[in-house]
Image 1 (cartoon, one colour):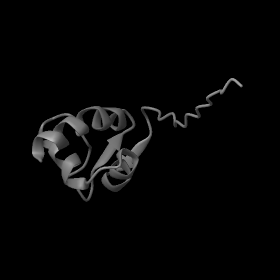
Image 2 (cartoon, rainbow, N blue to C red; image 1 turned 135 degrees about the vertical axis):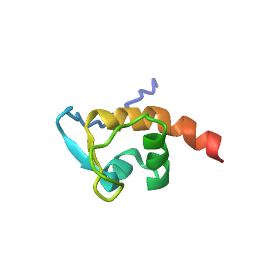
Image 3 (cartoon, rainbow, N blue to C red; image 1 turned 180 degrees about the vertical axis):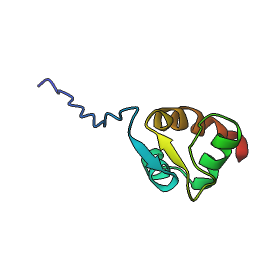
Length: 77
């Protein structure tokens, strides 16, 4: 009997005008706040706001943080 494989993908479309706090961005990326702070320090993502407690990230920051965060996490350990 032939076995078939079924794969489900789950995704969320994030528009550029969506805004996220630091905590929301970390949750969406599945990463620690310290890592996102380092991405900000390296200019990978650019939040609006005076400091981490007030930062607001555009929707485009989500993909950038995911793309670059894993590489930075490896170098930090």
